[in-house]
Amino acid sequence: MSRVLLTGFEPFQQDTYNPSWAAAQLVQEKPPSGLEVTAVRLPCTFTKSIPALREAVLDTDPDLVVCLGLSPRRGISIERVAINVDDSPGLDNDGRQPVDEPIVPDGPAAYFSTLPIKRCAAAVQQAGIFAEISLSAGTFVCNHVFYGLMHLLETEAKQRRGGFIHVPHTPEMPAVSAYGVASMPVDTTAEGLRIVLATAAAHDSDIKVPWGATS
Ligand code: PCA
Image (cartoon, rainbow, N blue to C red; front, side, top):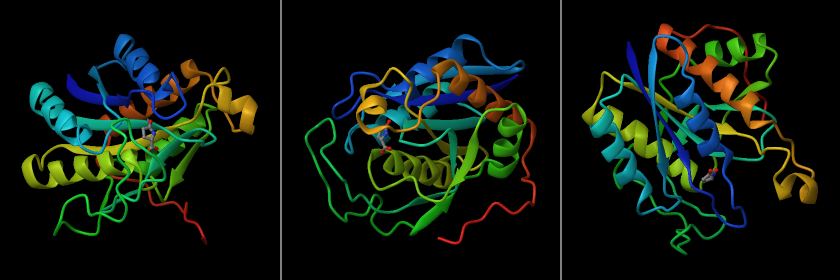
């Protein structure tokens, strides 16, 4: 039985709901077979999120760590790379807005996800759920947590693998009607995430298929 830590975020800015946390709870309730999933909700703040994640990793001692966040994406958006900068487009839940600050002073410029990202995206698509590889998790709290996770795994817990996935809005969220952003029912998001976890738990290595971008 592999142990998986799956984090989601509390709501932030104008939202009262965050599907990343709702989906994490659904996956914890009905995990893929052979996996024990612990869902933990992270605060959406630059100061508190990484310490909360670190505590959750130490508490649950997982084999695999997958962090989730909300972003206006079309489906399951599997992040490839975390970068060492906070350049917040708005206020976090502590009212802070760091600009061009390193997440880890003297840390590497970037870390790659250690999930088999293309294998996971392909498996989700095979189930008829939209999935993509993303080249940027942004420079708000999600990238911050993604970088903090990969730095933690690199420096304190090398045997564990991890990565970050952005999930889309749900059809009920105000941004969907106000701004016409894409959406996915949270049950479908949770199903896609189950496939990601099952695939990542079963395979260390990625598949070598083109999935690049020209911009
Ligand atoms: N999404 C934000 C932070 C929390 C969340 O769910 C982001 O994409 O940075």
